[in-house]
Length: 59
Image 1 (spheres, rainbow, N blue to C red):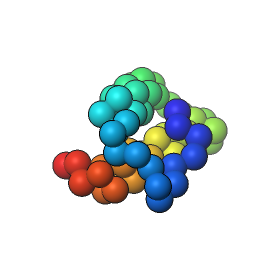
Image 2 (image 1 turned 180 degrees about the vertical axis):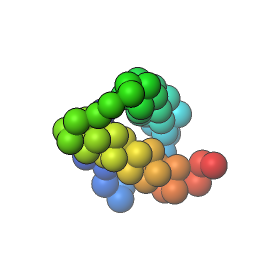
Image 3 (image 1 turned 90 degrees about the vertical axis):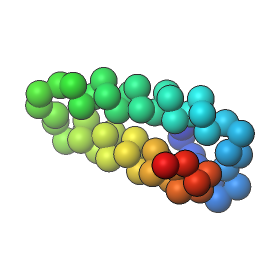
């Protein structure tokens, strides 16, 4: 997981970063139940994916 996404994020890394984030998210979402920590991790991953897609104009 990317630790810090800033406004100066380099979109040249978006393809690889999105691939990793989406794989992590899919792995966590595949579980039938989530504790509070896992749910927070899922939320962070979703936010990071949304940030990269918005910043780099990827749909």
